[in-house]
Length: 619
Ligand code: ACM
Ligand code: ZN
Image 1 (cartoon, protein in one colour):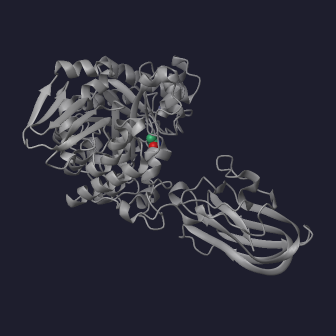
Image 2 (cartoon, rainbow, N blue to C red):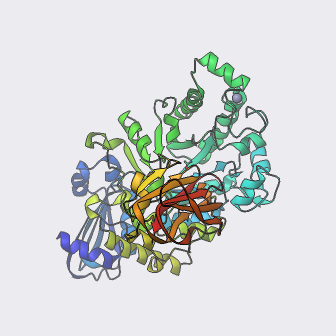
Image 3 (cartoon, protein in one colour):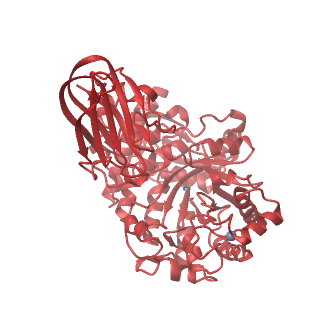
């Protein structure tokens, strides 16, 4: 039966793949769908499932005369109807049994960096709920703009929902200039409509109000909640900060009935806290050893407030630093370590590791894609992710699920949001719903392409898998050149986070992919390395390619110099190139030599921050 199921899924196009599908001969003549909710037999069968899965479980039985849905709840019925919409009519006879692998199957939209209005969000809820995603996480506030009407503090949107500059670069370079005309915000009526629209589609909207970091707009809009008026973070020393946060959360909890409220908690610079008299007094009075514990103090206090109102707190994995609040749920983004630690400590976690779940990365060759943030993440690389990896079976109950995050720094246009979401969010949906045993990259890819094509017919702007270029071709080629296996002396060390093949990285024949890391060796300095070829030999040409990724702080070199020597003491410069292509993403810097040499010294001068190169090729 398994073989039949696998073969037929692609043709039937169900996404996410169901737990099981047994086909029978023929098609049905029935057109009406019979619904049996909470039927005893089905309830008994699904009794062995965890509660969250039982709630969404369904069985569809199609016979020549009948189409029947059985489920325990309206949510189960809804999931079954969603599956039916993906099947061709008249329906084939057979039985589908289905339930989710995880309770939390989320998509996050950052509407702070570039605002997205209500209609756009409703349209995404349509598409996201169609693949059985059940959480829409809205990143409502950040330094780039405050996007949620708060009636007790109208100054938040009056002052911080609009700004100068409609691209992240302008915004970054101009600093915090909120007096412009670019932006927008959700009214409370908009928020209620979004919540209700999502609820009809069995999707929960989770609001995120960032604190204490990523809060420059709040400090700007509301006097007296930063350590200084220019602080990027809220001041945990001042009572006015807590008064503000509680007043905001009162309204947020009223608008968003979700069990969880996301309070951010990531990347607080804590820059001003150790100098601020209010913060210092707080640390002394509360016996807090350092600024991490001061952040924990804020998070714990906010958690108590939320818990007292019957809600639970979620934060990014930084909330582990300085001690986790008693009931907090961790959203793991800096890899999976934070989530694993939270689970070890008996907390719940949601996995959103950047290298698999950050949909702001380019999904195809960065040289052809719109500018993106931080690397290369094609559909297949999302799909292979398993959030349960590394979690002991007896702790799996603490893994709530998985989420794809779409940060918007580089995404000014709404159509571009859709392009980044679809089809990669389908991989998140399938990871979250389908059993691990159903993993089949080729079958999934076909279904994802078909579903994306369906969205395009309805006017969505998706990436076209059919046109995917794929990984950098050089990565699949092993080079042969005179430098292979040469001794390499590093006058400047590689950075420990990006070692690639360590001392042999630049002479192993292996080239990097589209993204930094992998075979790319990283330097947070100039590059100054000398190759020893072992013997004097004729050398015709020397070249090395550098990768640039400005949004990740990686730039082309300002200058490259190549020297040669026969004895390792007396060097002759054969080339002194100024940076030739500051806007190029993958640029070779090479020069003819045409002389005998044993030693080759290759030097690259930084423009700023990082340099990445993969191979010093000698011919
Ligand atoms: C994050 O990406 N700063 C959560
Ligand atoms: Zn302070």
